[in-house]
Length: 132
Image 1: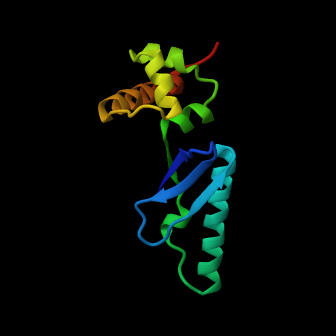
Image 2: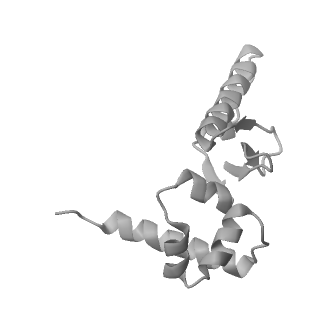
Image 3: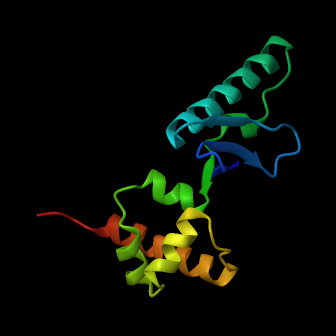
């Protein structure tokens, strides 16, 4: 199941499942960690309800979710990433990337794909990295 995490206008975060017709689970909190914990709490409550009624628990409630972050949430959750340096490595203007992070500017699909591709490369690089 895919769970979106987004920063709200008031600075709080929301986590909610996407593309599931059977149910909607929502979590919120002052931090991403709190929103995720609240989301998982909602999932546990739904599982308990299914079991109390003698119904089979849907697989979506048992499977580990895949999280999708908006850019603001991504940089907040991984706060050790310097936004300006990150932008420079990708070839995006640092000021523009900071605006994307704040949610002040629309981000095109091509820019989002460029950022996603770089994040994927970083993951691959880190996975093969060995410290000596």
